Structures are given as C-alpha cells and as structure tokens.
Length: 317
Image 1 (tube, rainbow, N blue to C red):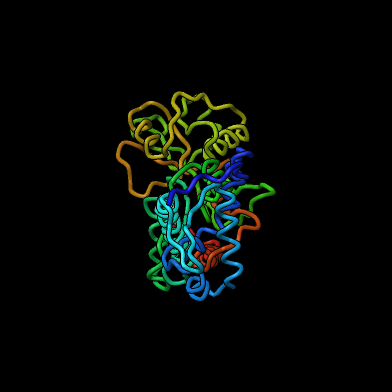
Image 2 (cartoon, rainbow, N blue to C red):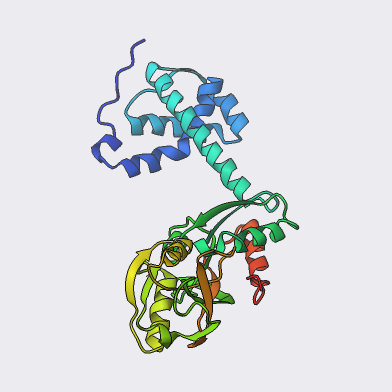
C-alpha cells in the first residue's frame, strides 16, 4: 500500500526548528515503543501509559510531521517506509540522550563523580597536585578535569559552566561570583645571577625603579599586582618583555633581559637571585571562586569544603 504525505503539515509552515524539536521530542520514546512492539496496546502496557494517550500521541506526531509513520490494522501497526527512516534517527537520538544522561549521573555520583577545577599556572607544579592527593585520601575515586589558565579566563569558564571551582589571584570581586580568600603568597624580586643587586637578600622595590621588567601580559592577575606594587613604590615599571607563564619570565631574567616580581618557584632556578621585597608588602592573595547560585554536585561540594578548610594552609610554608 502506498502512503502519500499528508497535506499541509503544520510544522512545515512555521520554519522554526526549535518549535519542531520542542513539539516532537516528548513523543519520540513513545514512537520507538510502538514501532518496537507493532502493537499499541502492548506498547502502552510496557510504557505504563494509557492506550488512548499513546494513540493520540502517534496521531499528533504524524500530523506534526505531515507523513504516515504507521499502517494500521486494528491495534496492530507496522511501519511505513517513512516510519522506518524516522525510527533509525529516533533510535540514534534516544541512545545519545541516554548516553548523556548516564554521563551526567556519573559526574554527579558522590563517590566517583567529576570536579572541573581551574587554577593558575604557578599552582600547577606543586600546590594543586598536593591538594588533589590529600583530597583523594578520603575520596579516592573522585575524578578531576583540570584546567590551567590565567585568572580572567578561569572566571569566564565559571560563567560559561565549564568550571565548577577555580583557584585564582587576585581574589575576584564580582556580583555573579562567590570568592573566598584562602592564603597569600610572597612575591620576590627576581634578578639575573650577575646583576648588581644579586648579592642582596632584601630590597625595597623603589630601588628597582630604573630596571627593565619582564612581566605577564595585561589581563593576568600577577601583571595587575606588579603594576600596583610598582605604583605604590613610586614608579611605573619599564616593561621590556611580556609573557604568559611565570617560569618563562624566570628564564628571561636568567638570560639578563630584565627583572621580575614572581612567586617562589617550585624548584630552584639557576641563573637568578631571588630577593625578599621589604617595601611595599609584596604578596598576592590566592582565593577559590565559584558561580553564585550554581548548584553543586556532591563531589564538587566535598572538594569545595576541603578547599575552604585549607584557609591559611593552602600553600607550602
């Protein structure tokens, strides 16, 4: 039997793909169930929906699509060629939805779920591995998606839903974010090993006013802190080189290309001397931030609680 397309399909007149999806989506599982059993009554029993509701849903689905999906013989039905074509895509879509559902359930599992955690590059060598090692002593199967980036990029990651939490500096102050100060880290003036100041152990930052500086690029938190400390010391730094990573800056200093204000390295770097800055007080605050009102999964809540308990003890002594 040849089935012609129904005339004047309702949704084809709108041209609105979102309306089509919204209209069809709730009926796809019902359609797949009827197609599998080829019997409306049996499908209704299996899916625990009234037979009349299922029958009306299939009729409405055909009306919305503008084609016959079933050939009917009483309560027994069989797929038309259009119905078979549609079923292939529906099964694929339902399988993808089930896969996505399983993935988000797995990510939210208290024991084996996932935390999307962002942190500064300078936290990656020692601080973050130590934190995760300590956390997993009590949560051994929680998984982490780790992202290293500069502060502003991580805050945008929070806003975009790509990160659950991030360690950043300076501690952000924004109405859509929640941030808590965890610790502070001393900054040092790093100079080449053969520099005129290299034999000093302590220095006032104003003594470096005539030096060329190597710094992170504008937009990085450490760059803002460097500019602010130099301003407090009474000068604007003369920037010779800008980079994206603190250890690269140390390499530039070792090559004699300038001086830099940097946090302590994870491992001693040859070719440089690191001086304690006595004035102004040269520190950067480290904080944890998350999106205001964003619901936490159990693993995220557990890791957030763990981080907040580390206040004052986040960084190595």
